[in-house]
Image (cartoon, rainbow, N blue to C red):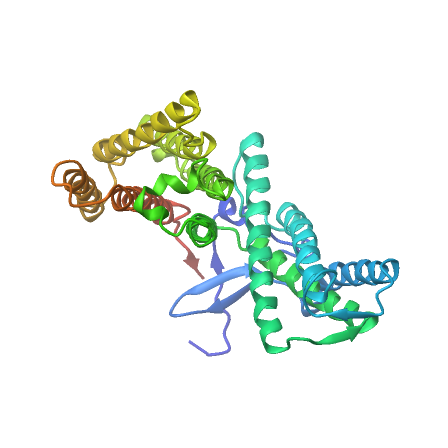
Length: 393
């Protein structure tokens, strides 16, 4: 075959219709070869890419710079410190969070709608709101840590109001652009990553900010009890993590239910059990472990036990609920169940584990199993969705 000769390929129209083409209706695709694969994607001109990048960078940045400058005039601040009250870092952190939230929300609605395939309006509204808040918190945390290290490197720097406003505009513009890219990259891995970051980061933050250094000698639940000075951070972490988990469940099952062979009773029951597990997990945080209020403590205790029961039901019913599960996954799930039983024996019977160690081990195993189950469901979708024969002419 001549090297300059053209080869045509054809794909089913039902698959082509799902492509998000934003190139003036020309239906042109960009093809590239990557690791012995041909990847097709919507063709975007260089001008369109540059326009989109500038729009999402400059508009929030210029608005943030204008707000900062007006603030400095109102506060009659001629020279601005790098850190502290009404400083470059403080204003940037707050404005980056504000404009980042707005940018992410708009970008998700306009650009990421093809990734967020959830069909239910209520579920989509909840998912969009949850993801926007989650990424805003991530944006807030990363910006705060960034300026913490900048202040260490340039401690004591003072700049005039115009230079300070320009720097704030630049930092906010970069943060908003990154948030726009995040909204376009919503998929299973992204939602899972933000879930792990929120849960682990929130719990770790509650640990290091607890004024009682020996809290771990009592139990893990102490972080969310009324005896802890920052109980609300721990409980809010559990509630918000449960909301992200619900978003992940809605996302993956919206994909799976597009495949007729998986739209069955077993999958519906599995989704119901996973949703119930997420809700009960959130209730553990919603009902504070407050022993001075009996009914509140009782609800917390019942929620925690219900969470364990639901996880055990999931493990026991996996072979029926997920008949396509691999032998390795089932053995792993049963192994997790065995470790949960072993930790129970080491705590209740042998008294080798402390209550804190038992709670941390049980929580880590249960959460790890849920993530593995969701990963297995995502793999199930990838292996069975939109597989078709491509004809080469």
